[in-house]
Image (tube, rainbow, N blue to C red; front, side, top):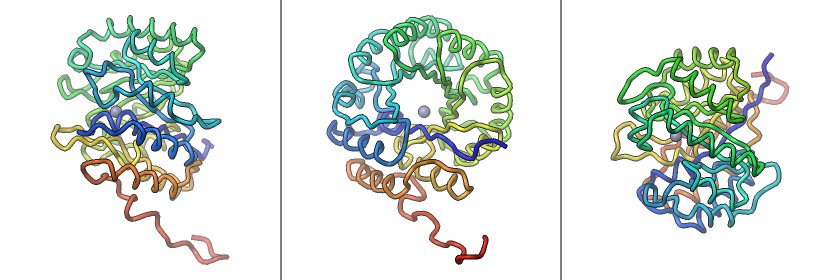
Length: 307
Ligand code: ZN
């Protein structure tokens, strides 16, 4: 029987805050990450070393990485797009470099103005530098469940990227449903295909809740054997003006979902909830989380009776 526990990868400080309309102040980012570290989470994507002109919300990546109090047992990750970003990241105490490429040529061109092959060639150099410096490597496959420009992504497209990541020494691959195009049947098939594949890669799934299928996709993936899920605190990052640009599935909602299913997350819901309430004070709109205000179900079976 598969293990009854999951690992949650908190990506809110990066994937969430980079899409907020406001610049989340640096000291508040540091405070947020320190609160996340204290909640029992073991994986936190803390920053992005993309060019500050491209994403000004992440311009303080180095200050954030130097400012946080790294907790023992927690792996801190940062997104790196290229060698320049990698060198900046390596000058900080970051544990893991997160690489990214789109499964779709069109999306990759719009995102980084390169073909998928050009991106992979550049990432191989980034990965070599990161490995030399003793850092862990994570690889995102963006738009893995569908691309708003090209539609369905083929297994052949995914295979080329998985092969490349495995050859670079990437340890974990995260398949992103960037614009919320995945559905539970597709997700279960994808999970089965990946887990039966030849790649020496741990597989994580990364869902955005654009069409309300985020939690359904998580359950389908879990039942198909996936044990690592990306999520963002409170579902932060939903951009109300961009079509399909919803935030990640909410960490609180995932903790509630799994704990109610009897699957351990190792995360303390209440301390996470306090962190979300504190973060929300500096955001222009309320977080989309369902459990932030409602909390977890209070009902418990009377002692001596089983539910
Ligand atoms: Zn994402």
